[in-house]
Image (cartoon, rainbow, N blue to C red):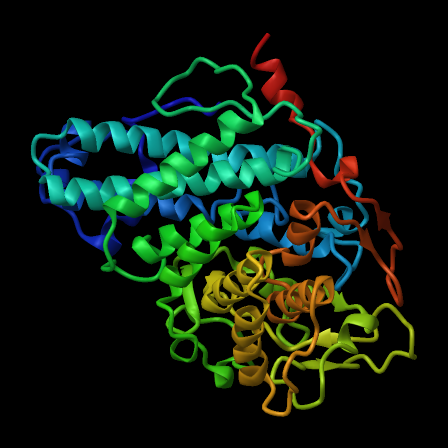
Length: 463
């Protein structure tokens, strides 16, 4: 576990010029790496600066270009599916399923980043709770955001290092920390871990309201979106439905804008974006901005990600998401035959984490599992017709309807959040690559490669 350093909040110094903070920060000379908790938690503004620093940690580079921020974790999942093809550069080992060493980059980073954020969140919660200068209403908003972050990052750890919630393998789960400490806690069980996740997120949702500074911060809708994802993963469909619907507001057409789909996915002001990692010219991770830096083949970037030819065939010519081309004029069947123009790379490109269409499709899947196929198809077709005016109404029933929903999730979210791999893991399905893949992989359901190994550095810290 990353050590708690409440008096060394470099992130506060880094972000304070963005959010503004109390002049107390400047009144007296202090060491550059030390700001007293009394100052940080002496006002809502000071605490918000600390929170902004934690949010900035989500884009931090801890190892290298494929181990830089939450977006790296999500993109690694994307290339482990069957829809994308990754060149043998950054993320090439993820695509090749060669990331299962306890000393490897993927295990170390996917463990370090969540725990670094969780550690700072625990410091933050303690500081806000103990503050006598922050009002109860403001404490609810601040602690609500922190709890949502903690629950979300524990969920990422569960996805990466645990077996699926519906699996009966019951492997050891990561340790749980809810307060600052430098002493390693014992490993947990699956039930303990998910109880913590749900408890944090439900409390966050109850504390939060609708307002926020911008879409990089967390409000009630974001917390509900986290809950929708968690309950979907757990197979608790009534709760997944409720939270997904409330997160997007229940009006599907209001949160969809097909005209934005071909504009580069680079601005969090877009109608369909709920939560994002923001960037600007002086606050950028530059060439570590994935998926954009990998999937944009026009800008000066990596040009590292290609599209499976079988996946391309799922898109009709009139689907606004059909942004594929044989950019390099490769022969039919070549693994570099297709690229997409979905993502536009610049240093200022914002990075999407959750968009409303995902929540709409969670609701559609929930209705299916609850036995409401008519309602499920109604919700599903609202997205399908928004994306393709010539789409025909869904006629599938039973498991075929579920397959249509899962395919729609892939078509809508490819490159963004590893949706195909996520769905295969949670539903105890496999992944089979066909067509023009550079590396052919057949992953059976519940294969051990659906989870990373605990990093050796964590085990060594316990000796």
